Amino acid sequence: MEVNGLPLHVLLVHFVVVLVPLTAIAALLVPIWPAARRRLGIVVPLLALADLILVPVVVEAGEWLQARLPATPLIQQHAALGHGLLPWVIALFVFTVVQWAWFFFFDRPDSPRRPSVAVRRTAIIVLTVIAAVLAVGTVVEVVLIGEAGSRAVWENSFSPDPVQSSPAPTPAP
Image 1 (cartoon, helix red, strand yellow):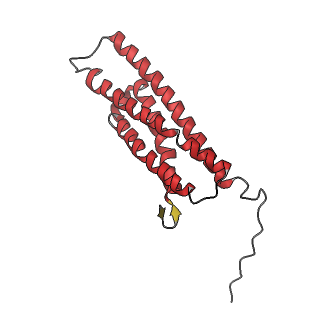
Image 2 (spheres, rainbow, N blue to C red):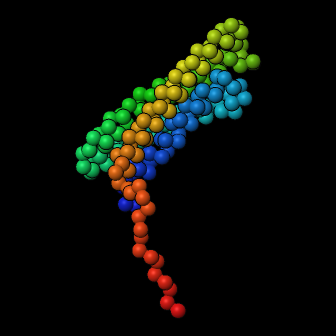
Image 3 (cartoon, helix red, strand yellow):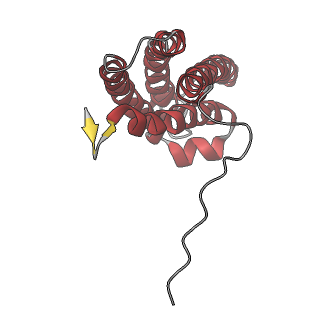
């Protein structure tokens, strides 16, 4: 899978690196910041759905690329870590849907099913703890995967000192 001669994986991975942590942080903001809750609404579950679709595509593109590279321990480590992101993204998606449903259907001032203050406070604490765990887990996983991928590509492939290039040709008069 290539786009303009570049492996699709190296292009799509940037979306995952940005979108998954952004979704996790937004999911954490929803229970602790009412203004974010009102503004983000259904957007957070939709972002999580995009993550859920995108991560397997990026993994598949990575497997395609891995089959076309020499096997190295760094590439194998990156690939193994890459497979660990999907469970986090599934959990994040399920959580954001449940969280959105709680705030949309129950914890609204105009809801006839609005629970007591004690139940709402308990729910917000539980949602915040779960969101924090998912945010930390997904962000750490993305960082570990990205760091392993960067090492696989760049470790020992550049000079610590500037490389002398040939001087630019001087234009003819």
